[in-house]
Length: 112
Length: 113
Image 1 (tube, one colour):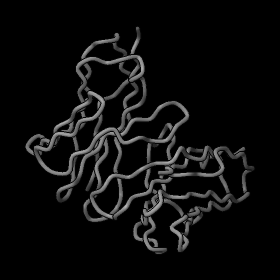
Image 2 (cartoon, each protein chain N blue to C red; image 1 turned 45 degrees about the vertical axis):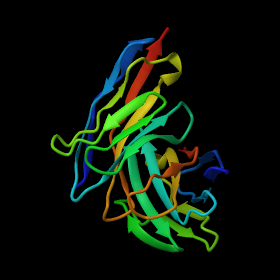
Image 3 (cartoon, chains in turn brown, red; image 1 turned 30 degrees about the vertical axis):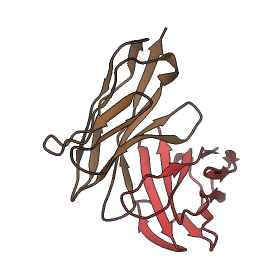
């Protein structure tokens, strides 16, 4: 079956620190992989995506590379800002049907 | 381009009542999916509609139902509400059905008392 395992939080970092949030997946077939971000009281916003192995998604300084050999899609950012404080969700899209499988979310707090 | 619009934003209902939530997808998007978000279970898939037909359904009881109209707007209904139905209900719209990103609305916060 399909599932996503995401690094447990919460994560607290100082401004300008390096961020890594680990994400691994199990899937039948060849899914697309996504990172979504959720700010308090809001819905999910697409942060980045990758649709095939070795693709790198990037947006707003965040990056993630689709690693088929390790079934991973880790999120990284070189220098976090206070405004990056949010909950981050790793997700896969089942190619056999239009359904997303989400990780449990990782809460990030960036302190000045 | 307007985003996904969900109404209402907040609802308080009593156990045993029923509720209807509405979702207007991004213009031109024909696929609408619904998710339930709770602190304990995280994000769980409810169902997906495309061209007015339910194409996929998650593992929820029959009290949860939905429909899609010809203009792609969707509604979901929960009957005989239980306390455990308290959650944030998120609607997502996509242009196509497969391997494409979904755009989420702000959600409807349902509280059952």
